[in-house]
Amino acid sequence: MPYKGQAKKLLDNHGIKEWDSIRVYLDDLEIEAVVLPGPETDRYIYLKLPNGYNIAYNVKRIKKLEKIGTIKPKYSLPSMKVTIREDLPQVSIIHCGGTIASRIEYSTGAVAPAFSSQELSNAIPEIFELGKISLRELLNIFSENFLPRYWIDMAKAISEEFLGGAEGVILTHGTDTLHFSAAAMAFMLENLPGPVVFTGAMRSSDRPASDSAVNLIASVKFAINAPIAESVVLMHGRPDDTLCLVYRGVRCIKIHSSRRDAFRSIGVKPLAKVDSGVKILTNVYIPRKDREYLTVRPYFEEKTALLYVYPGIAHQLIDILVDHHFRGIVIAGTGLGHAPEYIFPSIRRAIEEGVVIAMTTQCIWGGVYMNVYETGRLLKKMGVIPLHTMLPHVAYVKLGWLLGQGLADEDLKNVLMKNLRHELIPCEPLDCFFYDPIS
Image (cartoon, rainbow, N blue to C red):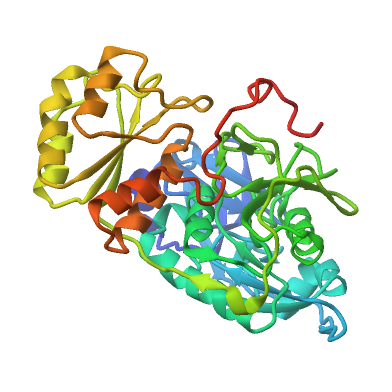
């Protein structure tokens, strides 16, 4: 039970648990309701009213509780025949977490993830008219719990789906770290026969105005029709449901915590937009290759760190990473790629002990230019590798991927600075800071 403190004590004193049917006595009101699971709290009791609405009462308002009975939440869906169209292009959907569909028992308010063909056909039947859909559950975790080792399993699973005939592979993923995973697949998979499309939902499908169905339908359209064969992120392009945008996996981040159009391309325009059809917005993309050329390099060194510079940053943070045998550190520096001078000895020590240290900027737009000011020149002279316009999370993923392959130091440095998947922008367009992502 998520309840704690006063709320848990109140329920325990009356012998009441989740899903119990109860009578609640307030100062001026007496109601019957069902106790719902709620977010972890010590102040409120969450209830399902007979009219179907949910409500929460502060425990201080509740004078007395009486248990009437207990119900068992049930999940049921209307029967719907699932027809797999053999005449349509094959699209694989790999579930890695997040909620693209939910089962709801409206008498109780209980919600559970849904992913079977039967469940998806009820929630998003349109996708089965677009492609021959195959489903695979790889993971079912919150995206904040993702670990780099999961990327290795992900890359292998994607490869298996393409070799099995898929024209495109879609990964449903929680949005918080979706851009990390998209960057990882960009490096681990080469010569793709089709796009790897990461999508998710800012609002799960049990909530009003969910974006899950629109995003998944658009992902299937893109996976089938786009000539692009890259790791991409596909999410809402506007707060409404009119269109989705497709972003290069190594050039986008989540920049809003709750809006449905939470993702943006950084320094480049989106690759495509999807509404009733698919419109490619650029001629700079990696095209589809024959399946026989697909290459998988599923490597990652987990002793890789991403460290943001801030006023007062402790030099011990770098020392601790060195003492724990970390092999690579990406520094998201200030401005053009700077760090305070008092941490220079720790950086120098790390480099002398064989730790690869690379510099990015924590500014969303722009890049690292370490020859402009003395601070940057000194860092570069001691061996810090400037990564120009590479985004910090992409640099972290790329460095960990290269370290996992055991490259010699000079080779690793050269490849780290090389533009492999359009992760670097040789010249940032003048209008990139102001552009309308939809125009």
